Amino acid sequence: MGAILVFLILSIFASPATSQFQSSETGFISAVISEKGLVFVKDLLIENAIQTLTSLTLPDIHQSKKIPLIGGVSASLTNITVYHIDVPCSTLQPGESGVVVAASGVTVELSMNWKYSYSTWLLPIEISDEGTASVKVEGMEVGLTINVENQNGTLKLNIAQCGCYLEDINITLDGGASWFYQGFIDAFKDKIRSTIETTITKKIVEGALKLDSLLQTLPKKIDVDKVVSLNVTVVNGPLFGNSSVEVDINGLFIPSYDGTVLRYLNKNSQLSDFCGGEVKMLEISLDEAVFNSGSVVYFQAGLMNWLVDKVPDQSLLNTASWRYLIPKLYKKYPNDDMVLNITLSSPPIIKVRTKNIRVTIFSDMIVNVLDFGVAVPVACISVEVLATGVPEISGNNLAGSAQLDDFTLKLKWSKVGNFHMSLIQGVMRIFLNTVFMPYVNLHLRKGFPLPIIHGLTLQNAHILTSTSKIFVCSDVASNSSSIMLRSF
Ligand SMILES: *[C@@H]1O[C@H](CO)[C@@H](O)[C@H](O)[C@H]1NC(C)=O
Ligand SMILES: *[C@@H]1O[C@H](CO)[C@@H](O)[C@H](O)[C@H]1NC(C)=O
Ligand SMILES: *[C@@H]1O[C@H](CO)[C@@H](O)[C@H](O)[C@H]1NC(C)=O
Ligand SMILES: *[C@@H]1O[C@H](CO)[C@@H](O)[C@H](O)[C@H]1NC(C)=O
Ligand SMILES: *[C@@H]1O[C@H](CO)[C@@H](O)[C@H](O)[C@H]1NC(C)=O
Ligand SMILES: *[C@@H]1O[C@H](CO)[C@@H](O)[C@H](O)[C@H]1NC(C)=O
Ligand SMILES: *[C@@H]1O[C@H](CO)[C@@H](O)[C@H](O)[C@H]1NC(C)=O
Image (tube, rainbow, N blue to C red):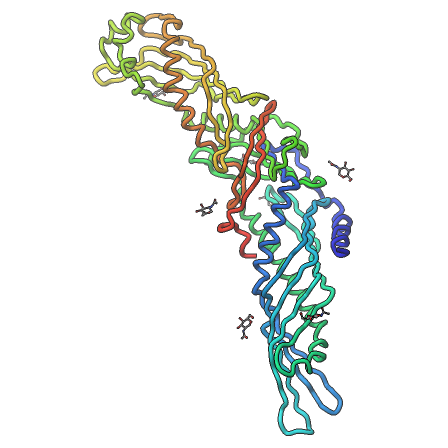
């Protein structure tokens, strides 16, 4: 236990606020790993460390000694192999600029071959013996202090301290006259101890470096589709709280191709406890600017255009259905089929509110008549749709669905005379409910990936909304078959 304290204290003093990354930018997506989440991370790390260290082979130990009257005795320990590790107690503690991972009461069991030989002037032959031995280390303490900082938008790990200390080891020789050599083997204790200490320390440092290179390979953007990517550049943090760690990422959607950078008003974020009383491992907050940036990128890519030539009640797309409401249309194009060309006139606006999400969609609907197969535009109606959205989690994606609230219609131009919008209000409501909203929902249901490390999945996720922000509170499970830390 003492060593844990030492490591904690070292970490607090040895890392005097190493140039905490200060950014003028603020992230629009923040992720807070709670105490429960840190325990999960710690267990994952320890489990990986145990897996790597088990079946580890330590360097051979050779030692020679001159013994008076007898002469030079040389002994060696080979095939020193770890076959069991038990970590009964471990902690992960956020410090000033990093985290301290400590394990105590660790038991390590090793097996090895021993051999010694000597030749003396007394006898003409070499005397030697060999056998196997088992080594049990009890009460080992291991500590690792890692500083984490934001370097050019990715997290960088630096090992500030790594130590391994074992109090005592117990070597048991197997085989016939082995009791006779026990004393001799015990002379090796210090050498075995330091070999174990340095090898385990080295392996843990190697593991931490692997973890760092894993972080370095994390992309700065996640492609959602051919059009948009999510900018996951780290802009702020990691900010270490007493028992949690927060990382803020840019979090705005950007074109998948290199394009204009969107600018949004920055809002301040703080290490927060937005999931209220709920104890979840991970808390992700997404500003409404995230959704609006996606809306702008899709809009700028010119993809918000849609031709409708099929509706549930197909007769609505024939001028005959409109002969009483818009007589001029029928007179000019009797019994002609129609196609609707719907184009968004500006990016949809998304507002996150305490109870729900408000979406306003601005579109122009051009009514085309198919006159002998040629589409002739006859009128344009601007349609402003107000919808209410509900976010949901689907796998690791944030998705949602929306429902029509209200809409307004305005005739922009017409080649078939003026007609009153109130006349088509009813038909329009049916159209929006049966064609337009299902189409919107088709896209919303896919959603976009939340920035979660590959191999981890969200579990028991819960979504809360407040003014301008969506909070995802979730536990995380590792898909142990694909977790990347395996190669410690
Ligand atoms: C080394 O030790 C391992 C584990 O105890 C054992 O499986 C292996 O056969 C040993 N190799 C030699 C050459 O003794
Ligand atoms: C950060 O990125 C810039 C530009 O890509 C590069 O010149 C600089 O060396 C990087 N700094 C570090 C510490 O990697
Ligand atoms: C060493 O291990 C042996 C066998 O497990 C046990 O009998 C003995 O008490 C142990 N000695 C110490 C000092 O732990
Ligand atoms: C962190 O711990 C310190 C000392 O225990 C305490 O003064 C401070 O209020 C704590 N901060 C938070 C955010 O809990
Ligand atoms: C991604 O975010 C970073 C940090 O906010 C910013 O510097 C960078 O320009 C963004 N990338 C794009 C393509 O917008
Ligand atoms: C649909 O309308 C848009 C915008 O008015 C126009 O650019 C596009 O060519 C039209 N598409 C068809 C197939 O009429
Ligand atoms: C784990 O990952 C594998 C391969 O990616 C996948 O087939 C499997 O369904 C995943 N399991 C879980 C529980 O997510």
